[in-house]
Length: 570
Ligand SMILES: Cc1cc2nc3c(=O)[nH]c(=O)nc-3n(C[C@H](O)[C@H](O)[C@H](O)COP(=O)(O)OP(=O)(O)OC[C@H]3O[C@@H](n4cnc5c(N)ncnc54)[C@H](O)[C@@H]3O)c2cc1C
Image (tube, rainbow, N blue to C red; front, top):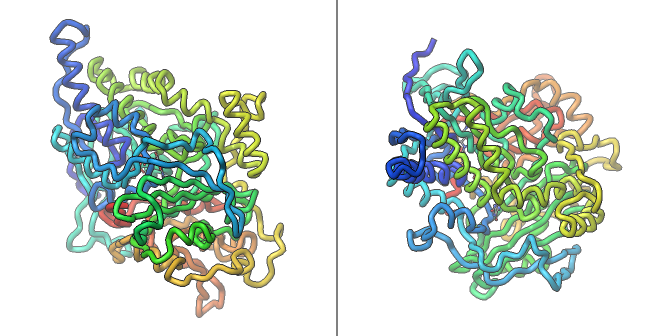
């Protein structure tokens, strides 16, 4: 039995993303505001003592695991800190021009009007990783404790299934599970309220939702994978402030996908491609889709003569309103992408993540005011969400992603109808139904592949290490590091399935959907059988394997704190 230190706090936030950083800062500000109102007799509650607030983050620093586009709608930032620019918020550029391209293999058709959801003029292009670093400084100045290198490994419950905090991961366990000389057991952080802001497919959020059935009666979540590179290009290739979104090439019409190209300061370009993780063909490889996207003549022209600086990949919650879980339970609240607050039509989730965090903070003050941390008080959070602009924004696009599950052309007609009718599916039906991606993937026998199926899917794709890169080269540019002498954090619950059924039925799609070359089928020299090999140290923490595996036998858990990618500046 390991003896663990217990640390008592009032509120513990898991994950230092925009949702939780905004929440913690707002909480500190709201305590002051609440107490002033009580002092002046304008609020009949009681004063709230200054709270002990902690944020734990699995990355080596705040921002190390933050990956986004990012064009930021500043609506929530402005509510959090009206003078955010004067206070030094590190936005990169103001969007000066929007473009929407439909791409065929060799040509582009520039839409004469930018679809309203993709109009970004006046918004900000930024590195979200940098913004989070800055927000963390503001939190620390306000007295919030931030603990990088501390992954939340397990939720803690009392005998009534009430959440009472979180256990952080152990350090110094070797690959066979034995303690090393530097062994440090994880700490039990006890809190009256725990807030999960782990981003897309949070590992604790997944545990919690399963244990407390928070997804009961909701539609299954659907995800996309965003693969991104940062480039430095010769002056003149793209203007600072130019924002381009694309549809079409290289995705086929049955696959949800689209690209972005953002012109930043100093000739830096943020470029990426999003592939729906609800694709049908098991040979699809989202990393290859992105590499192919860059070979389009109009895209390649922007990158010509440039140099790739950084790489990253991360899953995105695409389901929106109908796929939101229950947002609270006794002692716990869910914010940001963990709770499906992203607007899939705009591919924007930073503003909604921040606002959800701020509403969670206001709910927490109320809970301390009433000294009640059960769902009776915490459920006011759901009411606050539903009476805020988050509801207006997400409800209007509630059928967006599900309509793409019928294919691109029908979805484009449908999206226009949704726009005109305030979100009705097909202009009259109340809703479309989402199908989980892993249930949509089709078996190989539906396709006419023979021999090297991957080559047939991507016949012309070469990794020239100039414009296009293989996964291993890309992973190097993600700055990934994990101590190799630790147990793998990618748990395959039944490796026999990989060697038999999955090989036959789907051709082991993990080798393709993982954008970091973690999974390989390797011949066992004794048995001659091809078996799964997991290169866990390559993992960029995108969570795709946990999401897309058709048998749902890959379980992503947090590795030793500090391991993973380094997305500083991405
Ligand atoms: C490729 C891509 C492009 C995007 N482009 C845009 C865009 O242009 N504009 C826009 O508005 N939105 C964009 N989004 C969406 C946006 O980035 C997210 O909606 C937003 O970052 C969600 O914030 P969050 O705080 O919920 O989670 P995240 O930003 O994911 O932050 C979660 C944090 O929690 C940490 N964490 C997770 N689990 C644990 C744990 N168990 N213990 C400790 N720490 C943990 C993570 O390391 C991370 O630091 C994009 C997303 C992607 C992936």
